[in-house]
Amino acid sequence: MEHVIRKLGDPVLRVRARPVLKIGKGTRQLLDSMASAMYKAHGVGLAAPQVGVSKRLVVIDCGDGLIELINPEIIAAEGSEVGIEGCLSCPGVYGEVERSATVKVAALDRFGKKIWVDGDGLLSRALQHEIDHLDGILFLDKARRLLEPSEVEEMERREEGSI
Ligand SMILES: [Zn+2]
Image 1 (tube, protein in one colour):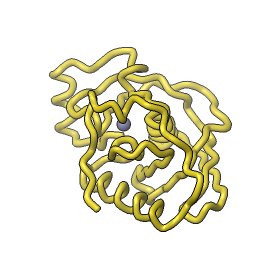
Image 2: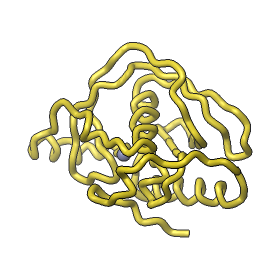
Image 3: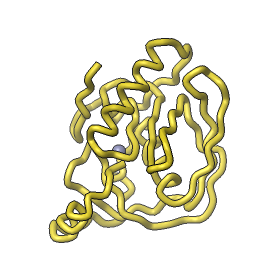
Image 4: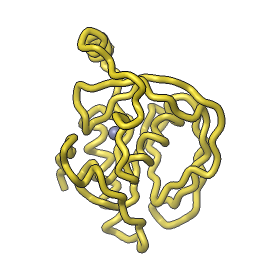
C-alpha cells in the first residue's frame, strides 16, 4: 500500500482523529506503510492523518530505531525548549516552536500491549508534534516565528528531517 502524504489545506489534517478500538492485521499494515512513507520522505515522524487516515496512530524514528504508537497520550511533561520544526505536510515551511523539554507518553504497541516512551531533545519534540496531528493541530498554529526564505535555504542545505 503506497500512501501520498497529505498537505496543508487537506481537511483530514484538521480533524480530531478517532482512537483505535481494535488492533488487528489492518492496523499493523497501516503502521508498516506509514513507516515506509516516513522513511521515503526522509521524515522523523508521521501521524496517520498525514496519510489520510483519521486514526490515532503515530510512527517516529529520530535515528534510534522505529517507534510505533497507538492511541498515544502525554502523561507527563516538564520544562520548555524552543526549537525549529518542519512538517512533511507543510513542505518548505519551518518555524520556531516552544515545546515541553521532556515528555512521557503512554500508548499501545502493535499487539495492543501498553508501552511508555520517555523523550527528550528531538524525540520529545517529535512526540508532541505528532500527537498534535492527532488533534488536528499543526506546528504552524504554535510557531512563534516562521523562518525567512534565506533561513529555510540554510535549513534545507543541512537536509534535516521534517517531523
Ligand atoms: Zn507534521
